[in-house]
Image 1: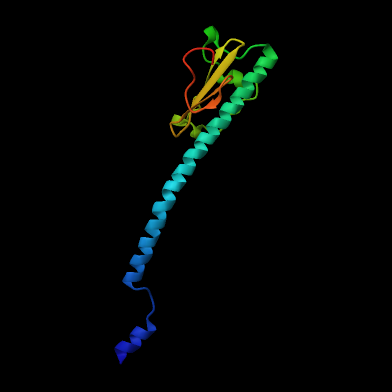
Image 2: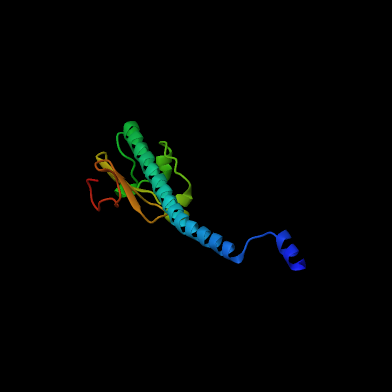
Length: 144
C-alpha cells in the first residue's frame, strides 16, 4: 500500500517521453539550421548587390559632375574614397569576404565602367555600365 500511494503522488515524464521530445527537437533543428544559413548567405549577397548599385550611382554622378567616370592613375581601379565623395555608402564590412569591403572599379575613360565585389558567401558580383548587375567578375578588357 505504501508503494502505490507514493507512485500516485509522484508526477513527471517517463524516459521514453523525454527521448521522443529530444528526437523531435533534433529533427526540427536539422531543418531550421540549414534554412537559417541559406538566409544569411542571401542577406550577404543582397547587401553587396545593393552596394554595387550605390557605387554605380556614384559613378554616374561623377560622370555628370566631371564628364568622366572616376579612375585612378593609368586607368587603374577607382578609389573608394573618390566614390564616397559622390554618394557611395557601403554596408557593414561583415557582408564582404574577409570582413573588408573589397569593391573595385575598372574604368574605360568616359565610356564604360565595371565595379566588382565579393560577398561573405564568396560569390563575386559585378555591375557594368553595359551589362548591369551580374554574378561574375568584370571582363578583363574594355568595353566593360
